[in-house]
Image (cartoon, rainbow, N blue to C red; front, side, top):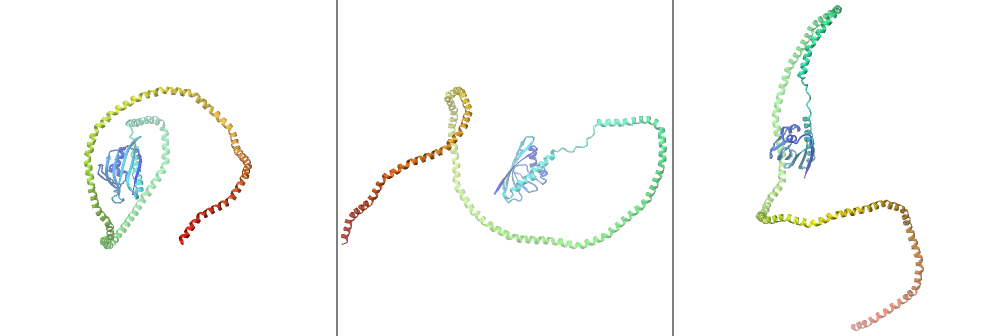
Length: 455
């Protein structure tokens, strides 16, 4: 059993971009992040998503539709599905993609449906977004005019500064001289302290250099001692490595033998299972051939009948043309006949309109009367309820009255009928006795005759 998958997705790009992403090998492998090799010709093969998907192109219409025979590597052998991509342009430069996949095995249907969204649509949308995102702005080169202005300012600054200095120097000369004397007097002890520090640093430098040399020499000696130990360890390990290298092909051969030995009974069992199917196919072949032979005369008869049908069509062609010519004439005649009726209807319309106008005040009067009738019904409602309640009481009273009137009449009728009943009761036994006597009289001669016959 197989299933079908249908999905619709909208992308913020034109159909040509989506078509190229699906059919161009580089772009396809870029957004799926798996290798893909896709032929752009109908009948050409393709592989995608790292050889998991393989198939053949059936039909291609640039930027509109793609039809492919499509299967996954984990599908059962011989099972294929048909995938169709249809691309339609949507408003705002977008694309509406509809995917239809028919013939997907039931076991894989859910995984395939989820895979389209996770492995194709989402990465493709991400790639389109990344392509549309603006690049980080680079530091713009300052315009030449601004640079020229800055240079001009830079040149002008020293001139202005020099002019200012000349003015200030003349004023500041006596102040500066006094300040310089004070600064020199303060700086003398500081310079002496700095000279002492330099002397102590110069003495400490050779000691540090000696310590570094000692450390370097000890490291070199340790490494030199460790080298022969490592070489000896390697020599010891060499025969073990060689034995392992020799043992590998033996193990591989043993594994192959075991796998072949295990595979043989499975193959034999598979052949046994397949044997009845092969026999059934071999038996079915002559039946198919016989069926073809039986069908052959029917095919021949159909082939012979074709020219007859064509001849019949040719014969019928002038009749069809005649009918086609007659149609407008018939329609014109029918229109002429229907014209007086249409005129009559057209004349009748204003009369109907006039009748409606006359009836309008009556309708208005009825519409106005409706609320009055409703109010009257509301008023009459409690009276109706009272009557409805009173009806069963009246009916009960009538029944009682009729019963009370009927009782003396029934009694009188019973009294009158009593002597007749008594007379009937007395007459019943007499009638029965008379019937018995008559029956005996009829039976007596038959009995005598039977007795005589016995004697």
